[in-house]
Image (cartoon, rainbow, N blue to C red; front, top):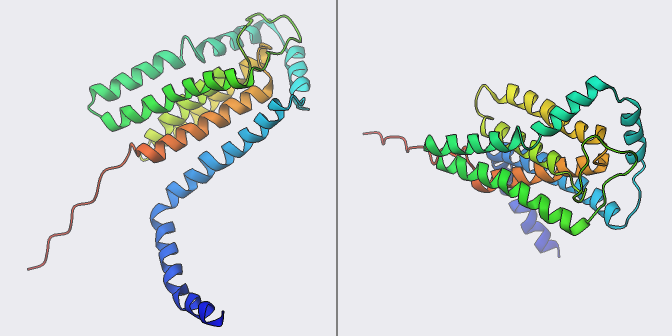
Length: 238
């Protein structure tokens, strides 16, 4: 027993150096794996378990009631616009434009990543709705009624997957922070509109955001669209 511990301690410095080099070289990917995949998946699994067991979530109805009490004609128009931009008028055409632009620019790796991230998120949403079959809220008559299943929100997943995919594509450019701020604002606006219109529970929105973020981050780490390939070897000294 002591012999085995002695061998382990003898290799400890080498293990420490290897771990330190790995963190130094891959810290961005490790951070993305934690913040973009592990945490969102943990949150989604908690929500999914509650929905699967048909347990009411304490914050759902109070937030819907608050949204109903905040209604006004001007907010109606703003939220209807956000809801349309979150799918028909915004997310879908913009996703097609970005994908087509990447293909025309010869950025095949990035186009593949973007198509898998956004298109795969849409397919994942359809599968999840069919699995959880959660009915939509019916606390009042919505001005924009929906009739499909509720969990997770397709609008929330679409807005988050589009915004996150663009942010990750632009992460190594000067446009990353403007893209992050605009993407976050757009995602919150779209998600909030679905609660305001009474067609989604807040938990549907949170589930859509977390599922989309985890999916987009996982695809990014697999495809590595910003990968520039190995660095050229330094010329040998004569």
